[in-house]
Amino acid sequence: MTKKFHIWTAGCQMNVHDSEKIAGILSESDYGTTGSIEEADLIVLNTCSIREKAEQKFYSELGRLRTLKKNNPNLKIAVAGCIAQQQGNAILKKFPYVDFVFGPDNIDSLQVWIGSGIQTRGNRKQRTALRENPGYHTKTLPMSREGRVRAWVTIMYGCDNFCAYCVVPYTRGRERSRPGRDIYDEVLSLAEQGFKEITLLGQNVNSYGRNLPEDMDFPDLLRMLHKIEGLRRIRFVTSHPRDLSEKLVSTIKDLPKICGHIHLPVQSGSDRILNSMNRGYSYKEYKNKIDMLIKSIPDIAITTDIITGFPGETEEDFQCTLKALAEIEYDGIFAFKYSKRPDTKALHLPDHVDENVKSQRLSEILKIQEIITYKKNKLLEGKVLEVLVEGASETNDKKLTGRTCTNKIVNFYGEKIDIGNFVMIKILEAKLHSLYGEKV
Ligand code: 5AD
Ligand code: SF4
Image (tube, rainbow, N blue to C red; front, side, top):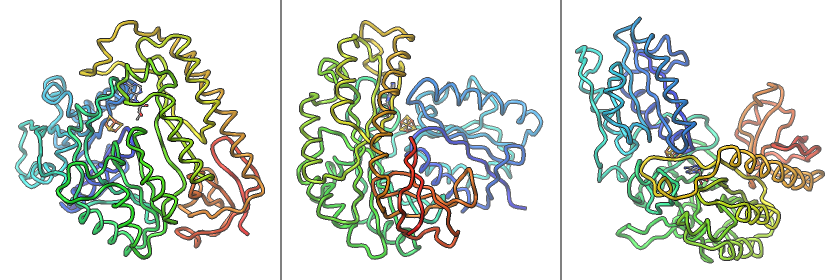
């Protein structure tokens, strides 16, 4: 009888994609997936440590598994992801019912752990895989991808930016780009399998190639992938404003398969705070890049990340962020309250902002942005847009859902046969987080 695994995932797209790699390894090793933790022989918790809230969610999930393990001593529990990397052995000590802890750069070690017969030999010894793994970025792991229409493709691992608030350089290590040829082969195979859209993933995709022996940068990579037949759309996240070059902008403009959407985290509109965050640009420099993008690609959708209440943020700094929101008019934003993270520089900065003030500022930002997002969506009413159909809508199975190339979600009544196809949709009604339309 095949054994069953269950994966719990928190955090960003990078982590969701890592879970596809974990599932790929397990599926190749005689494990079948189950949605129920009670049925599972192996549970993997793929954790996120970007903010304290994500960390709390993990600890409460892990707590829930204690009784499960008591009732089923054969159950194996593994902890993966960024908390695994940071806490390592401390997790094994505090939670003796955890069997294996492995970091984001050691997903391949799961093959070894499984291969050593964790279940069959009844091996009760706890293990870790947290070491530097220099060849990891050149490995191709098996993957069980979610869906058949869109796929994620990692192009680089780690991050060298050391923004003062961010834990990622400590959990995901130094920046390493995957060889272009490996990425090309993966995307070619996806196109041959019928995937229409890919999203290139990395903490800082537009610095791709910095440490590669071959002479290739991110625009060169885009040009190479653009030639792949059958592939219709290419997206990428996340771009760092400092590394957004004119060459990249003209590449997006020239190549029709590159989607007209860029996620360009600003974090704050105040130069003082940007400097203290170690972001490497002033607001003016950032705004110049936005102007360059819009001048070249007028229809481009722009989204961003914002942190409120970074240490030392005054009311005046906060007003600069509000001004930036009003000036740029993003299509959408992700905004977060600053959260103290272990190892980071910001932890030791003076003048930490009161939690209530952070919350107030966050809700003010969200309120202002709602008006802007809605206004921008409203401009699309009456327009006919090309939508790649991804699947049935979660709330109504007679409706289908898909995205425009600008990454707007569109819902409409349609036939399941359209899943995976491009359809033309007339937008009838703009909502805050989606558009509603009909097939033309
Ligand atoms: N507190 C709050 N938000 C954070 N981010 C990263 N680290 C923190 C933190 N310590 C946000 C940034 C980043 C996004 C992925 O998460 O805005 O762009
Ligand atoms: Fe992703 Fe960052 Fe969370 Fe790690 S800490 S899982 S990189 S969001």
